[in-house]
Image (cartoon, rainbow, N blue to C red; front, top):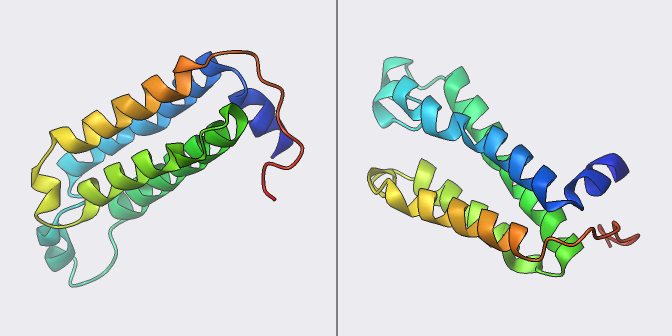
Length: 125
């Protein structure tokens, strides 16, 4: 975990990791990852696309949490959480620009104070 904190201490690395994990969240809905109809078609079983989508959203939250702790903006994690809610909750997932706006704000805020921050020793305390 220390390596991940050291990696996210640089804004460019945060940008690359966040974008790499964010892109599948835009591709997977076309495969039914956030669709109620996909759940009905699989007779209530959890689709692998849904699980992959959920893992990507959780990874975005972890990256934002670590980056927020490093740059002193602990609230940064709220942005990918909000994007995940608008991505996965029925009816809210019909509003496609809200998750995009929240992701863009998370990237801008995460990159804004792009100093070479050393990882704090008490990130998880």
